[in-house]
Amino acid sequence: MWNCPLIHTMSSPEVVLGFLEDAESWRLRSPQFPSKVGGKPAWLCLRDLPSLSGLECETCRLPMAFLLQVYAPISGQDRSFHRTLFVFCCKTPECYAHSDSCCMKVFRSQLPRMNDFYSYEPPAEDEPPGHLDADQSVLPTSGVKLCWVCGCPGSKACSRCHTVTYCGKHHQTLHWKNTHKKECSSGHKDTSACSFLFPEFELLTEPEVEEEDKGDEGDEAITQTSADFSSLAETLAETDLEEMAMHETEEHKVFQHFKRKIAPEPHQVLRYSRGGSPLWVSSQHIPSDTDIPACTCGAKRTFEFQVMPQLLNSLCVDSKGASIDWGTLAIYTCSVSCSHDDQYCLEFIWKQDFSSDQQSQIKQP
Image (cartoon, rainbow, N blue to C red; front, side, top):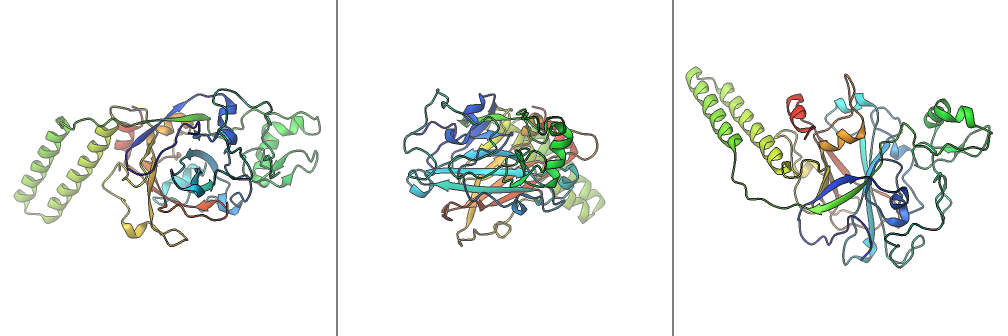
């Protein structure tokens, strides 16, 4: 078995929870097949990376930042012996005012055990490799150049020193103002994390322990709320009030269920259950089967994992006014995990928001 924090047989829709953990930087590099949050992406396939236009926010057209990746090979399927899902999101807070997910994208990359980039044998568990490229500006084997700021494909070099590459003008300007103006042509490269990146953590997992649902006072409150609204509707004989009562009751019920499910492990930032179902935060804006597009191969896409709102607490994105935000992010992937000749395949992500009242209750465990 490969030494990786998230590796499953995908035969049953059990739920696996993800938690953040500090880790040495070498553990979060591509040869270790990491699951991680923030920093630069640890690309799986080291060629045919997503295009620069594919990594732009569809709302503001600025480069998106790497959010997280999940290493999730499929047992018994050779083409998916190595398999990682990469999630990117926009850093423009105003883009999150929309209910759609145009400011986010998810890509799937997979390789057979015998491939051009990694050893057939598992990597050493507690022993860092003898040599590490500190700046991670060029992918080994393929020689693909990466943007100094975001770690995405970057073939545009600084016109003065010609030693630092970028994905485009936006990140070149950001790096110049940040540090490169002082160090350009000096031969020194600042390897510290750029402010554009999210804080980096390893993503460790453990199975969710199901507890008997004995109900709580929230259930009684749900019943009482329903009764109060029904009585009011009967008294006033207003159909719209009755419909409002049903909506409020259902919304309360869904949110209470969400809170009860995460209560035993309030610091979970990810829930993985390939072929299972998401844990929704609201009764509103839940996708129907027709909302989830089929894969380009024609196969149906199914749920694989969701990103929880608790992750926002560790991303340092809170701000007055508009802010990067979500209730939950549900990721749907090709049910057969089709092969595309080592290319990164665009999968589907669904962003569900919740109200400000719900947000204040759930973001802080």
